[in-house]
Amino acid sequence: MTSHDDQLGTVTEIMRDTRIAVLTYHSAEGTLVSTPMGTQDFETPSTVWFITERDTDKVHAITADPRVNVSYSSKSGWVSLTGTARVNEDRAKLRELWDASAGIFMSGGPDDEGNVLLEVSGVTAEYWESPGKVSMAIGLAKGLVSDAEPDLGDNDTVTL
Image 1 (tube, rainbow, N blue to C red):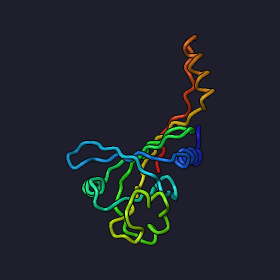
Image 2 (cartoon, one colour; image 1 turned 90 degrees about the vertical axis):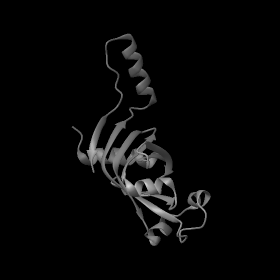
Image 3 (cartoon, rainbow, N blue to C red; image 1 turned 90 degrees about the horizontal axis):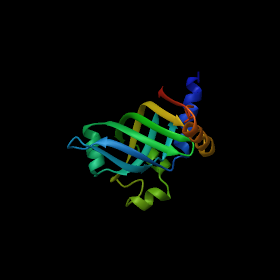
């Protein structure tokens, strides 16, 4: 049995190894919408920060229905983070997180009122830890020639 701290460590590693996450939210019409987002930072997997523009369909939709999912995928595995999001106006935090990549996608800078933080508060994180490409290939090959089930890595859900 893996400890809660070990599970959080796995989730953290996968999230840190992922360059672009996918944020999923409910549109004003009630459909699911997914959009790529660069994670600016997270203190723990339970608090994730994105920078976005205030006047977007995404921000309007999340303000109306804050339920979100953020998915991460790296060589280490996959994470599905479920929680809520809110617009955060903390200019000091926005300045702290602002980097060259933010300037590419948004006009103005961290003091521009049109730019805000999106703070995601995670409730649970389901993860799938990858055993690695070679181990997975060997496991799949064994499964094809025998009745053995391949080792596809660890999977669990962690309460944050």
